[in-house]
Length: 165
Image (cartoon, rainbow, N blue to C red):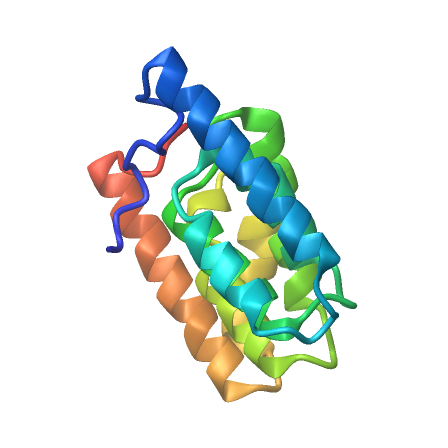
């Protein structure tokens, strides 16, 4: 699954389905917050929230939090790549959260996934500039490669019109 223009579960749902999706997101988010900091269940919860538009603000907060479990941040970055928010303000916030993760000096894996997940957010000139600089000059070759992937993906998205809010 690599298409960033798919509809999230609450965008195409009936009112009853949307309510159910919201309740599921709230339940999973509460469980996430109650877990110990390094619980692998956190990563599983992020995976369960995949495609649930109600969870997007929460995922943005997870990816931006340097104190959060690294694999939960990686999963959040992946979901934000696959399901970029349709709301322009939240989309902007998601792009900036991924930039925050990209600047995390302690978590190379998080940085790689953040760089790889920035393609849908390059409409923000700051994101585009940082991504370009990262692709050319980051000290970590895997982060550079991830940024290059994201730039190619951003061009593909622009050509096809996919990933637009």
